[in-house]
Length: 144
Image (cartoon, rainbow, N blue to C red):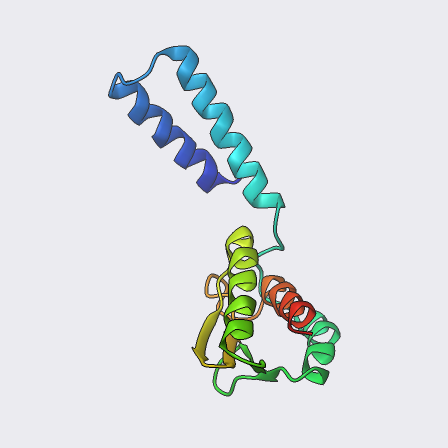
């Protein structure tokens, strides 16, 4: 558990005790639930660190071959997906939205009829991270 998680846990516990909303056994249950949630969040999705030069070469080349491009003036990747019709485009976006929510990592995107334009970058790290690569690869798989 990180220092931020520990401080959030401490604040949450203090608020619950001071407010007299719950008794001691409930505090323990709330603390355990928070720890479980925090551990899941920290291990359930790719790390949030900026890709280093070596990682960039190995993970970006396959994406570039499938049509992803680097965004000029930003550490981000972009691709335009074309579908048969609006229903297919919206279905694609719905599936990506579910995956993105699970990852706690959300794309910048724009949709008109059968076209979906996507830009991926991790704002927390100021550039590309493994989360962007994971989401881009997922998009590639379901767009086929």
